[in-house]
Image (tube, rainbow, N blue to C red; front, side, top):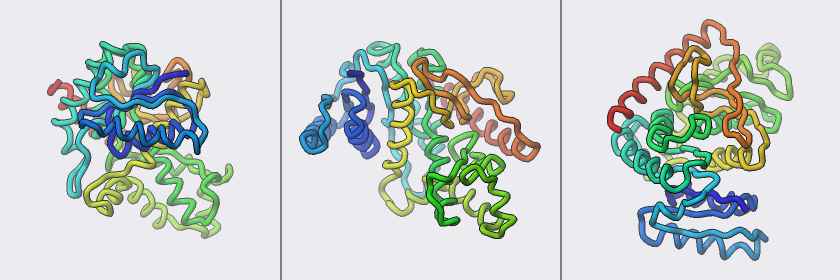
Length: 314
């Protein structure tokens, strides 16, 4: 049985553990600085095993050493965004936390596949790779799957079709400058433009869906008031972990290290990648039109600025 360590046992960490257990994907170690929280959640989920019929082991710990020999480490540790805060407001505190996590990974499981969820995402995944010293293709950020999932949901609701019929994705940074790719959006293989021409959806409605996608986390944050999204982020990260552990080679939008692709070098940015047993095995480089390129470059600049600031703190 493989081993997944979850750094952070808050809402996302607990949901991750539950989903991993339901999929019988790997043994689970929950790690958190809060005494009793990871142990309590581990025990609670374990006690559902006779009902859900999974046989994996779940343990909780307050010590990073418990992640020893992990195959996958998913990091959610850090302070959450509160109403009125941007993801960028979390930079200084979360940079220190992620840097400490990275150093622990280097010590206890340097060959693990790392998935970062902590915000500001694109900057934090760079900090994680820098501090852990893992190969860049073995460290990714969970953002594009979540943003794409939100957009798929909004389109499916508007068109009144199954969400399984929607194909779309989001490029760029995880924030207000993300770039939803309408030109690549299809419904059961039919381009979205056909639905516009048939007056099943308007350009103005699609623009409002794009804006709602870009503000996806903020909308949930305002509704919850004292919390942030955790169900959909956890589902997205589990999909990435499963593609790696089972060598599924799924094509997923993730924050990946670019080495010249899309004209970007030495930065983590959201792009379509193939994840298999070797981590990020291939980056899919799409042809962008002038408008898409302009928006993507704007997103890249925002990511670069924040990443440089975070790495200086390290």
